[in-house]
Amino acid sequence: MAVISKKKIIYPISEQLRAYLVKYGREVDIPIHYKDLLRYSNSIALYDFKGNDTLWETVFYDESDRTDIHYKVKKIYALLKADGDMSVMQHLYIDRIDLCIYGNTQPFRVRIVNRINDNFDYFYIKNADASRVYGLELEHLLSPNRISYLVYKDSLIEEHIAGIPGEQFMKQQIHDPLINPIRLAKEFVKFNERCFVRLLGDMHSSNFVIDVTPDFEETHYRIRAIDFDQQSYEGKKSIYLPQYFKQNNALIQLGIKHITPESMAQYQREERALIATRLKSSTKEIEDILSAMELDVISTPENTASLTRDLARHYKNQQFLQCKNMGELLRLSLQMVFHR
Image 1 (cartoon, rainbow, N blue to C red):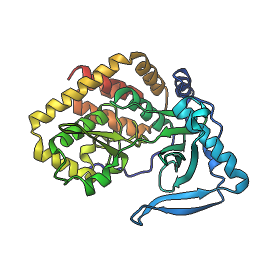
Image 2 (image 1 turned 45 degrees about the vertical axis):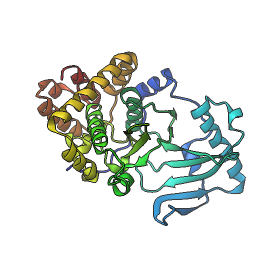
Image 3 (image 1 turned 120 degrees about the vertical axis):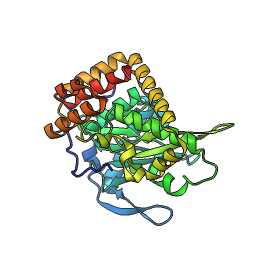
């Protein structure tokens, strides 16, 4: 089983990563920063509809600050969703700002509501961590999903990724007679392969959601990562394979029951072929992000050395042993999709 024993180091955004973000429009001047939201005067625990502690706290600001903070936070949402056009925001208001008290970066989550129809959305304001930014960008380029995020100085703005939390799905819905176990197991195999190829770690059930889409004949499933802190950081191969996390056992058992080794190998080849296609269609962006990562420090020397050995053994390729950093390891890992 995969186990992470130490808290991850938070890495600042380097000059080369900043240049990438500016070049591709991810760096945008925002009116309020993460540290400004820390000026709350009070907070209360947030409970779900069943009365369970969510480990989030709703924060409150002094009257003198609240109106200004809410306006600036709403403007951030306009930048994220409408290129800064505030005219489309006139019916929206900030309903609640929550602080996650257990996460590595202690993010703020903003709930924004349309007063006309009570429709709501969320987005997140976080301390910018280079690992997470690399993870978000690689998810955008290499997965089936598009990601909306912005960075300014030391603040990171992320859209909310909708779906049923993996942990909740496995507790409440995996035994539903209406689910399609073969399709769900197939998607887990493909998700497992995506994470491994692009070296996204720590994908246990609390760090992904399951997007369920009913169709006229069948139900489709998409497993989506929602936490990117462990992009190319850990030194053990197993950390990059969701199949090794005991929290995912319900999905793992589904695969054991419904998928043959031959089918699994086919799904893995299919996913690698899709990643290869995305690499070819985003050649310039991939080259630029990998070049930035190769000049960056986003892991420890011990983790890097350990992962080079693990990947060399896995692929039976001694070239991995020549890699000096996580950027070089990721480049070679991505190149392997063209050879298998």
